[in-house]
Length: 227
Ligand SMILES: Nc1ncnc2c1ncn2[C@@H]1O[C@H](COP(=O)(O)OP(=O)(O)OP(=O)(O)O)[C@@H](O)[C@H]1O
Ligand SMILES: [Mg+2]
Image 1 (spheres, rainbow, N blue to C red):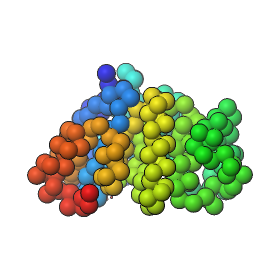
Image 2 (cartoon, rainbow, N blue to C red):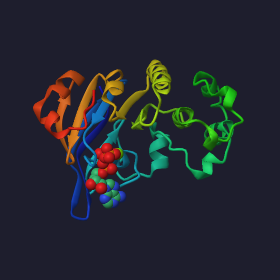
Image 3 (spheres, protein in one colour):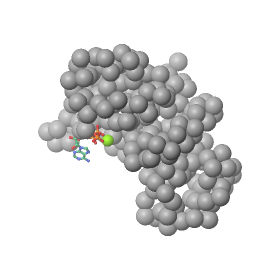
Image 4 (tube, helix red, strand yellow):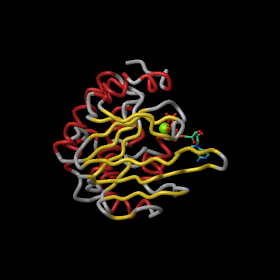
């Protein structure tokens, strides 16, 4: 059963077609991976889904509601959340203050994420891996059904990557549907049961991780593949 459907979405920036007539479905509780070379349109697709950008044409349906062009805050209320990048305003707040700002009843998530001991630290002072976890914790405090994660493994040490795998495993236990954009294919393929490869705004291939990386079109497009 689909929790989200992207129907013929196109996003143009002037002459540039960043997302070109993309249609896809995300099944309830699955973890879907999205790969593709730099500039393929992955982040733009997330921005359209999360409401930060209006598509030039096409539709996004989430839990049978047409969310196309709705405000991000409204989309978050429906349970679809893009994980948070810690930026200046929130960065000045402590870990605990960040969670409370989103949901006063959400503090238990910090214990689950091993962030409770860091609760009085300023968010911006956290090491990279823990800042990344806080971003996911803040998203979780909104009680989402589905999370969009854009390159969650980038810049993390091997030990931090392991911890993020543990967190993603917990999210799966909570029944959270996930879509993960990632260049670190080894990390992604540990999590995603299905993968879509985008190239020049279009879907090049969809299948299991093995099917996708073996596809000659994908190999040609995605020379950045490093295993
Ligand atoms: N706000 C914008 N205004 C104009 N062009 C944009 C904008 N955002 C993205 N683009 C362009 O759209 C194309 C797709 O960019 P996008 O960021 O979606 O790629 P991506 O697949 O996420 O790449 P990466 O793997 O490097 O993150 C690129 O050519 C990019 O330069
Ligand atoms: Mg991107």
